Image (cartoon, rainbow over all chains, first blue to last red; front, side, top):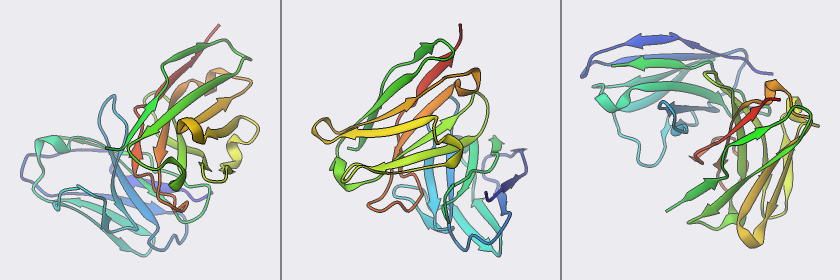
Length: 106
Length: 120
């Protein structure tokens, strides 16, 4: 199975700052990567798929990128509602697997 | 508006089975793949499998073969996940999630989750 490794495990940032979360795949997954946000006690919400395509309704301050097997989710001008846990997930081949999550605290 | 309404929390004894539901509304049920994902308390996410309600084709994560069974009823736009021979390791929240027309592997819209607690 493909292993997804996220870093950092947690971070704290202020409103207005730019935050970057990274995710590394254990092998080449091309651009088959998604990002989700999950708030406490809620279900995850899709942010990005195919590494850089924003899901419907996702604010443009979110962006995704890829460099080889390393992927990044960037949040420009962090907002109070952006707190939560962010997960990456590859959708290259089954079994699709998730990273361990990055907790973002405001 | 897309909605996935999942069934309520379950308290199940070890060794028993549980069947939970995911009722879809706001879209054509048979046009989109439905996924199931497991989340143990305070932990990450695991993909269990998916079902195509159009033809009932299924695909499972090999880790869940023999543990999970996916079915669907077109007439009620409802999908089901059954877990058998439950142990404490099966205690988790189980989410259903709507996909795209094909099994592209990203999960577009999620249900609220069903909490399963396995305890004597």
